[in-house]
Length: 118
Image (cartoon, rainbow, N blue to C red):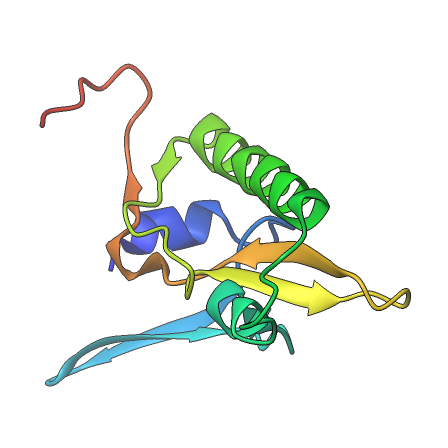
């Protein structure tokens, strides 16, 4: 887990929030907020027969790109985006919207102007 990445994203509306962290002999542990949401995987499994609508897919992808752009603007690379890392919340109109990115254990902070190696 990249602590600098989590600290950089603290209070961001695009990712889970780091509340505090601590270390002991077993490693480092981060306490993050509970978003009371479901993962994108959970939502997709709600519609096994007909699948998700094209509107849902387009909206979800658009929001996901916005959240990634926000992270990149703060020099943070997620490195583990998958269906379990995308938190989705049901809105009042029985629709779903992407709320936050989670699973930041592989996130990495890149110093401004730092070259990215593959």
